[in-house]
Image (cartoon, rainbow, N blue to C red; front, side, top):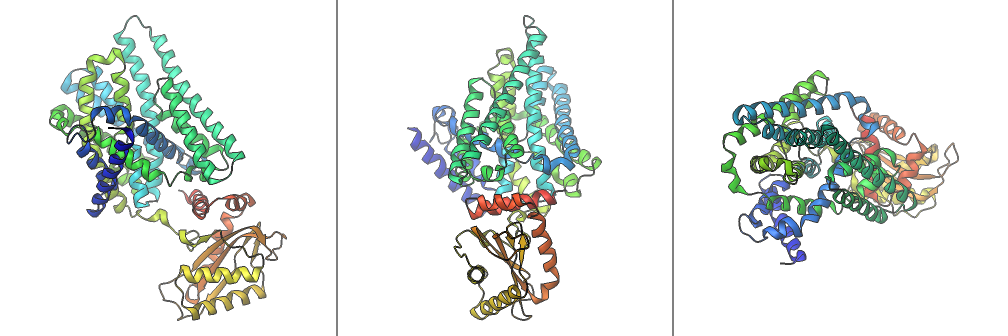
Length: 555
């Protein structure tokens, strides 16, 4: 079977599995994984071992690298500065407690400290892909999600670093010919190479992004830099996860186009996610479940217990929000990509060959369990935290995704106001008589006093009389971006390039000042207006402003 046909089978099975999973109110990722198990080499053999482990491996590498970049994008200085100590405390506590629990209980049963230490090291990792997929599918946002994504990113960085150090220790213990100093030097080379590759990729992306500012270019550039970073990492025989996390970290914190870059690939993400999780399913052999036995069960329970207790206690001690302390531990169960990468590293280390079979069987069997149970549990926890659907919120509380437009060509203020009222009437299904009433109110308000805010922003608004709209309907809004600008007689003399029309029902008039304050806060810097105007699409504009609000409101 050729690679193109294999990809078509993979995607078809993944889409069908995800669709069926959603019908049963399960995360799509669970359906993707089950579909992969069915078509894989361990069940129906529709895709054989050669295709799964060799032909399609580049897809898995690129998808996992993209996920690493996405996860690292949540480690933004500005966003996590106030929570840095809390996040580091939680990440370290849950990773180390999981390691200690796994090592202690597995060593008690196996009486083999090397196998127990390897299992403990892998136990520290969490599956970023499954967690991120569930969060995006459910459009979840809130204190739990903010802390979860940051903790998962830090957790996997810690897991990779700890694994390198532990493998150095074990290898030097087993091979007396290799000095401990040489092994430490090798560990330093691996970590230093990962850092250098990730930083170089990030700087390359930043430099090129300054020259090419269109979304289509950002998609190509980001894919190119991810492929470059991943390819160079594999060439140096190191896991591409850490370099790509560093790549995402550099872009997020040092590029003025970070949001446009990181959202540019959104249209490709569903395809890559379906490929990745369905392909991950093809690697899972259900026949390994009986081999779990006592030690496998000990590993799973010790890891879950360590992560749950470590996250909960450290979150409580660091005074994290209540949902974080109570529920974060449940979201750290998924384990796959990073763990599989560490297993492969063990398999390729000749010093660890005597222990590879036992470690591989236990880890892969536990991954079967965690990948089937973990995403479902994460979704349920997000539901209990009340954070599902929060990411799809209204900008400033009034402007939805479909209420942002770039296609207004008016150069006259009055003509633009008429166009925006028409846009609002279509967006909110306003009847003709309500449209006329709104237009009259908007124009009269503008004639009495200009609504030009300055710094390239205007906020025209009109009031709808009581009884014209439902009592449960509050302030509505639409946004237009006019690159050439329209004269709103602003005090600073600048033309308005971002215009936000507020539609205020009379019974909600008291809230409009809060909305004006929220808009003014986001556009307090002219740089923000420039970034919005430079955005390629309405979706990019939504994400830019969402990120600005998100950063300002983060706890």
